[in-house]
Image 1 (cartoon, rainbow, N blue to C red):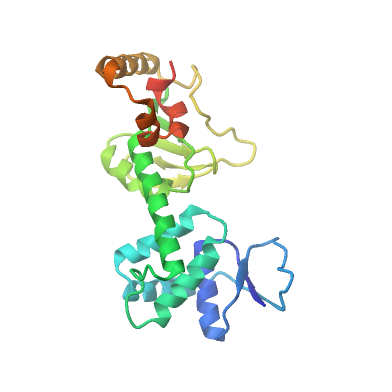
Image 2: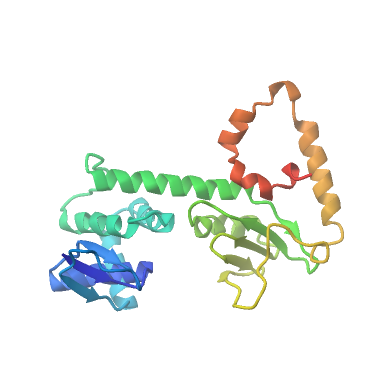
Length: 254
């Protein structure tokens, strides 16, 4: 069994695909740094991530797939599901080895699985666009904590960048310990260094703007006044507004 070891980055995966075609030998499994070799591994090849190689593979995919197909690949990668890199390796091989468009061949188990995973990630990104709630900090920055199932935050950032272009904001993924800060011109990825205290589920009273608590109370009052008691359907509410987002919604936390 041939095994490729790479750095578990998307660029590293694309480099591994480039190296596989160059060597004309394809791995049966991909592993990351520190992961044990499979029991029946007979050969190990270490992939050195190369941005130029990765870009060549990505350009090649752009010629074989429509934009939706390339988006599907990034969605599957952001799912962080076990074995998603092996799935992408098989998927991309089929793209390059086929003379036609394989992205709609749902009789193929890999194509169907990749599509289903991408749909789940896309749905999670839409939940972020719907259920992110900002709190105003004392310095004027608007802060929103999130903990999505999938690493869907990068997919939602363009929406917030366009929707709140005149404000400074930080959306922080508490589960993965990184976020995006928008300074009024550009959104950039940030992470807190060792020793620094990352933000939490809520701003403390010292961190919060003086009027923020009042605005949350007003929003809660508006939310309650708009509700029609006779038509409240908790089961439908949980389905359309997943419970995992509730702890970040001011209207649910009073």
